[in-house]
Image (cartoon, rainbow, N blue to C red):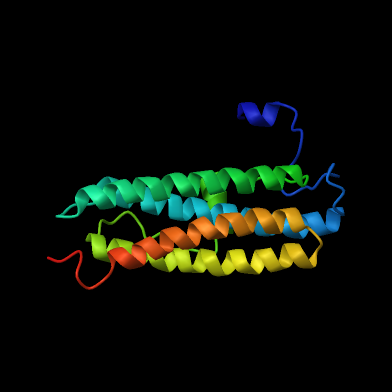
Length: 178
């Protein structure tokens, strides 16, 4: 028996409490589910980008190493914003690696090491999936009357799109040559 099973649990994962933001619990539940998917997606991409940050090699090592470090930090900041919003709405942010993998709509590329062009292509694909999901979740939040969550996601979307755009530049034909 683990220590956690011996202690009193304040809130079961998946349960929704009344929130001080006065958003109906049924609406909050839908938004929290979307936020937890966003949170899981961001963590999948964070770990993938961080792996590429650690393993990048080649003539453009320094620029890419720095960019990927910054991109990982942006993802970590996004995860924090998303988790705090889910908690403010009366939910429990998804936090365990196994649960994150289960709730994510994107897939981690795996433990293998690829050349940097292939790695960035994998990252860009996941960024694109996250961008699409974020747009859908902005619309969901708006439709449910949660303008603040929609605004938080919009702000995160701007940074996500900017990082994806930088990756597009790194993948231009005149870079990352063998």
